[in-house]
Image 1 (cartoon, rainbow, N blue to C red):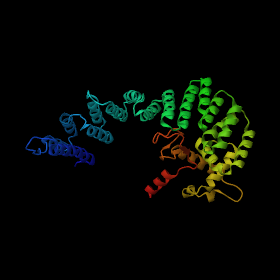
Image 2: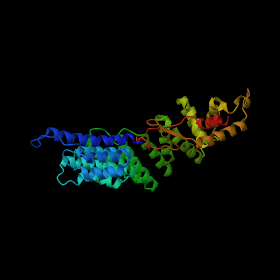
Image 3: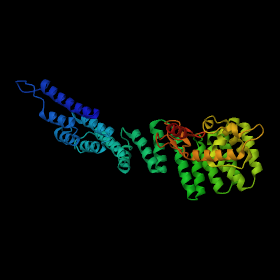
Image 4: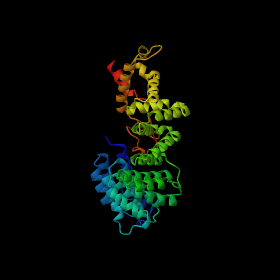
Length: 399
């Protein structure tokens, strides 16, 4: 059965047929002024399309319709339609056919190059798309769009320095700020340098990320990680505490590091005091502390253990599976039973997404600074509770 796209393609042919008929009917013709019959070639192409013989229709169309000022927009429309349908190879052929025209106007040539670059990008041929977008970024009317696409390509290829350069040009020409994006590009460079133990370069990149731009907590987190790796524990703790104080959602990243540093230094008493101070300042953070401890299997710290126990005893969904009232008495709880429940929650949490994008809902197990789905930066937030959806679904199906 013909698809909607097939009818759209057929419509293009009919428009061309109607235009040809109108030109013949009302334009200058011979003395008899007889309107020409409908071109049989259009009907032949239409038949190919309605029978979903797209390859034959495309070949027929390219041979039949010469690229000139009257038909070039139809070619562009057809190429765009093929690309939207995912038939990128056909879109590429059409736009290459336009570019091959020797007397093509400069503006139309730029339009064809831009369309072909988008075809290549859709096909995953990023090197070819990059070459064309780079050419168009040198002063064409598609300069801004070309730079935007170059930034996307460099993000995918992790060419962060080139992404910075394109982003800075785009800020000047496009009249909008890319401060957040460029800050993250520098942080990517910093993290790569730190992974290679080039901490001096890493610090320089972080500094550039935070100079003259709105601060991103990623920069502070990267600085804290560098301090931790270089055994500058005092600086690392100061930064981790500041991160939690300013952006409580990042406790999922900072708390495990804080606990590890204090334990490594044998300063558990100081850890207790620090966490008590934190919870006194942010009482609502208890649930985040508990969830982070469950996910990372952090135990043996009284303040954290108290948060976890309180979380388990007050989690309404957990009551669907375990009668916690039987485990609790007026003066004490069954520590062994709660330990087993905590272990089960840890296993469940490790099998369910921990982060979700606030823009598109994409979920992941670890923090991704750029969402792979919507490509926005710094939009993921951690879950604050163990996700019971999969367990509930399994329970329902078993009934």
